[in-house]
Length: 369
Image (cartoon, rainbow, N blue to C red; front, side, top):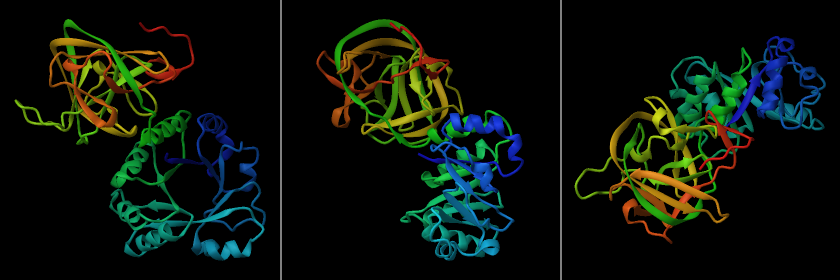
């Protein structure tokens, strides 16, 4: 999971509502220039002291992490020796604007527990270099970003992304959006084996092919279901077919009413996906990554309904195009043709626990049938 640090060093007294929102959203860290501004924060929040252009205080207060600019404060290792009784971790701030400062950032990322990096130029190539340089390091890279859109990009650089971001929010809602962006990155779901109980040819309807801007792996697809509390893993068209070429960017996903998973634990209807939408790619181990939709093809086709049951007795339904070449994934990454499924066969699925309101998880009564 990516780290989200909020920078409240400018006018912290005007940030009360933003701070309350950040705590509610379980933002990972709050950054302040004065230890007093960190007083009263709950234990769920990492308290970061970063007096960028002023001297370090003699008392770090409740701070758990102290970020220092070596040109102003001295070297983190020296400061750690100078303050042996302080229960804090020191980190380094690096402002990157040329080859020399980029090398400083790479060295920091290789050796420091915390590296807070500011990149002057809009290109993300320097960040790629730092991430590559720190590939085997144990420390964390926190990259300064201007807004949530930039955070989304930074989270995905080199497919690994920065370990976290530092953002100065300007309005209520930005902390929520930032946390959602961090949750939309790679994660893991607990998939379960579902037992097929029945299949039925249900007639004509519209189905959606989801064409993404990414290559799917052979054991990867997207989760789709008629109900928000149960989905089946539909495989992409990475596997050869006798009458057509493979299209490893595509999932023939299901009828247009179906749910799929987007980032931040949100569901989306297949019918509402468009160019630039995001969906969650999931492999048979439950590993996830967010992929961008390039287009959605909705066409009228014969449909087949697949009913399955979870180990806890929950019913799951998926309606797919009624054709042999449309497939789902089973245990061991088995590729199963949907029209050949029979009662007793096992497929992989996911069982969200929350009901949904406009796609967001919510704890309320909701009956789907």
